[in-house]
Amino acid sequence: MKQVKLVIIRHGQSQWNKENRFTGWADVPLTDQGREEARKAGQVIKDLNIEFYEAHTSVLMRSIHTLWEILKVSEMSWLQTYKSWRLNERHYGGLTGLNKKETAEKYGADQVFEWRRSFSTKPPQLEMDDERHPIHDKRYVNMLPANQLPSGESLETTLERFMPYWEEVIKARLLEGKNLLVAAHGNSLRALMLNLEGLSETEITKVEISTGVPIVYTLEIDTDKSIKILQKEILSI
Image (cartoon, rainbow, N blue to C red; front, side, top):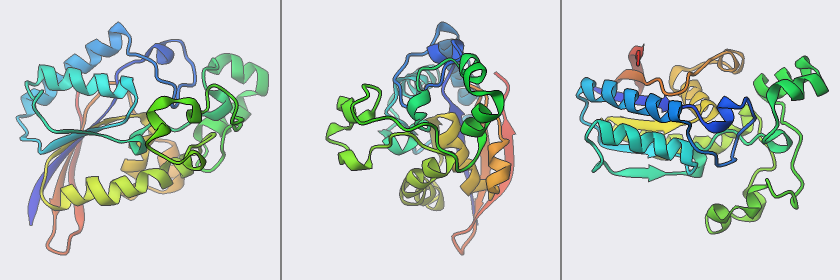
């Protein structure tokens, strides 16, 4: 048996976090506070003195830039880094860009809560000609067939598109005894936690993940290729 470390972190505060907007796949930058959160996270990660094998992030700038700040402060800018759309935030469809408070006033708090926190309910779907649809985003043109790009996702469908990356990359590296750093988003990290911690569909919808706060898992890899959590620590920044 061997032990391995997995450190996950939700990106620092973004501009639309600050403005209380549904963000999803919209590519918005970090705020000054978000960059500072990332730098503080970088320092506490540096203090852990973990020898990481590689780092993973989404293809959205708020996650990428969070990772950059962490690697810079922790003096690991050389670390091999991989980006995947499968680590993107959940796509909020027709809610993208809308203010959450104003949306609740328009549709009712119960409906908005259902869109935000149920496991299987999708938000209103985008039409293909809507400029917010990822079919119009150049980063996905050569990455995915148009019919695989979401018009709006539930947590369930976010989990489904995350699963290949979990099985083929993250879990596979952990089973090899590799220490990993993952900077991503609230819902893609919920998908990761559901798999790693064995949470139910109901339990995962109640999990809160703060921006810029590292979560450290100490894992035990058994000879039968099972993963056991020895410790989970939410660090203070």
